[in-house]
Length: 398
Image (cartoon, rainbow, N blue to C red; front, side, top):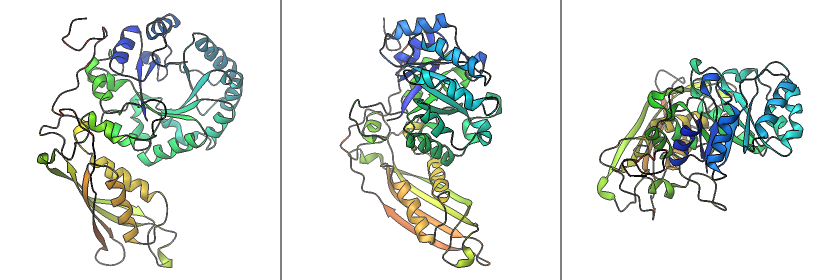
């Protein structure tokens, strides 16, 4: 299951994210940079409050790539007893030497290496393997310059998926962050990262330097299915999502279905059975329409919809795998991907090759899904109620 990492800058904010369900309480000061370190006294206050009830992580700050500087700060943070130590690695200076300097600490502390998507092209391709060899516990992708765009401005969803797989294949915990917002959550859950990290989305007005807001935190928490405990199967458990108002029991048939669609979506695709079609791309136009079970008569947030972004992300991911012989194969793969979502009852996929003559040629298929679930969702019209720092429901006495 994917967990929710919530960044707080002090005990007050840590209490809010804790009581609103964050799985990992992360300490960093956003006013000091992407990985701004909090004062040790504030970190100790949070550790005292949490008292082992949730894992706590802490950022070491935006440090120069100098082995002694990195090692000394990581050891200082580790001495507090924090569960995870987040260390930023920039693609300049003595990066490899910094990894080696942390090898002894990594043998008995959980170190999380943070890489930055806005520098992605400058990193060596084998970094996950190097971190694994040095004993690191995990790797996460984030953004360094928050004014230069969000994670999805620097990496496509399929590139994020490759990053997650590369890390997890090395036995590393893998996290994804970088000014993520609510619509990003279902898109990124599809790649099964170990955690999604949030700061700005938990704050009033999506401003990472504003105080954490209980309602915003509760809204993000509601989008991520909670872990089932030891021995639970990996991946997204849609029964849990049903219980959170994500999709309905088929008994609620009176709600009917809506149609979502992607039209005139053109991508370069390596496709074709002829020899002259191999080794190059040609434009293919996709039209996809999906019938989606409704969960409420009054949709209010991302739990209540199936985003068309998921369809486009799926098409991009399929296309990125390499050459496909037949348009029929391509259409079948897109249909199968869309039907993985149990709320989708029917999908029509049209894949049209645009460069083989004066007109388009291709295929259109229709596929259906038997939606079966025994989950009993809550009343999906109910809003998520944030829990405030004192631990009571909004409006309740402490």
